[in-house]
Amino acid sequence: MGGQTIGLVCIVLGFALFMNGITGSTSWTTQLFGLRSQVNDAPPGILLALIGAIIIFITNFKPKMSYEEVVTEKYNPETGEIEKIIVKR
Image (cartoon, rainbow, N blue to C red; front, side, top):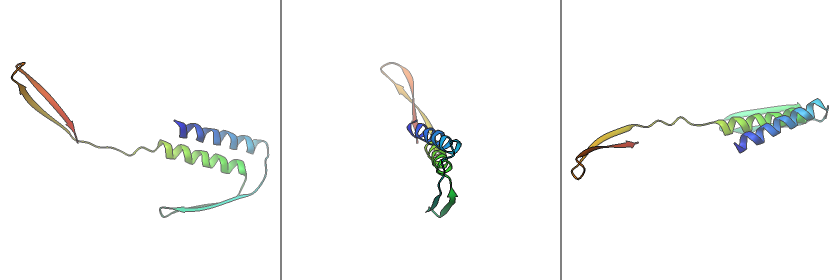
């Protein structure tokens, strides 16, 4: 939730900078894991909003987890009941 809040604050501040006409020129070039990103001559507000959107995307990413559920039954002679044991792998 912290990453989403930070991302939202960046987007709102970036929008405020853009709407108030704050000018400037910002360039950004990066390469990570074989992916390349390049932004040229962007106003600071747009760049801040873009960074906020990236932060939100990264903090929302959740890998898919798959597991196998194994159910075994065990007889308990003391109580006379059958107990189910569930193991997730």
